Picture 1: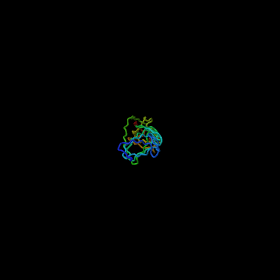
Picture 2: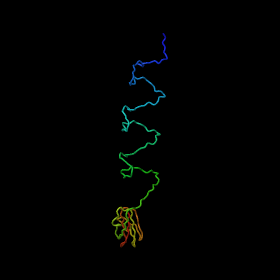
Picture 3: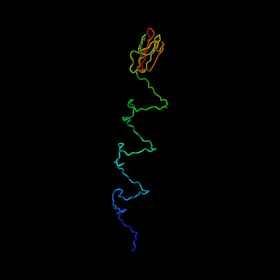
Picture 4: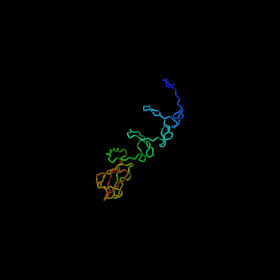
Length: 205
């Protein structure tokens, strides 16, 4: 009698492949049926729970527990929030030098404009008699002094300089003339060739 297949559906129970028994359920690669994914296969959901044999989970990790990646050459800008510099926490706002980030101006930096704030302190005038020995102008400096003005209201030249000023090395201030400088708390001395002369000293803080 001849054997033939009918057009009816035929039920088949696959028990062996290549002479080896097979069964439902997960098994090792050596005991699995080889297959190939179709060229038009849709997305296959994948749950990565290990990388390099090490379990991994979502969330920030230390470097040793993170998956290595590389930033693409055409990667767009990545927002960065700098909260530490050199291991020290940093925040916005003006700081003292020791808590500021060091920078350097470019070698071709254009000139920077500055705005000198006006004085908002005290103005004090003092009359000082200047003799033939170095006389500090004035005897007691104004606190937080910024600017000093010396006016020669006498009839002879007054010479200005440091504590060792003489008529030979001092800067001459002729009668009726004035000298001014932003010297802060530095001291200026005066001396005359003979007798005494009056100097009017104005200090601004």
